[in-house]
Image (cartoon, rainbow, N blue to C red; front, side, top):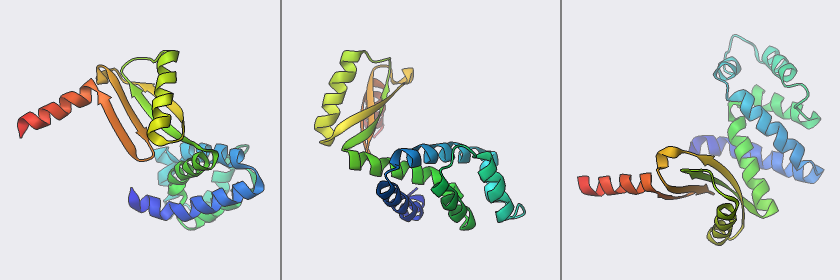
Length: 178
């Protein structure tokens, strides 16, 4: 994971800087998220790393596949990544771009995993808690996982808070086994 981050960082920094200067951060964010989804497919990963395919041929096919989702500046970016055998980094680049954007805009993305759907008042309270915790406004991404039994797990900016019953039971079991 850290190796991917190390490899992806220069690309993410350069792309974010260019997007900021051009005033098209949203367009870059949308494109990177799309590319991340495309490259998440195992067949696409295999095709991107297949030496028999030929880089130029693969790039042409890839750009054709992504037509309508790639901004003009993005074509050169894709060519650069593919030529350097780094197209597989696009997911990490997209994630880092989103982090840079959040930092720039003064919020933090927070993955919230709950045992049950949250009511509006709970979401409001959770947002206030996140703002205190992270010293920035939170943008919550809520998912439900009934295996938590009750409670919540928060993930933001490399931090994790597990306040779920499932997590408490795991910690208790670990202490009892020692």
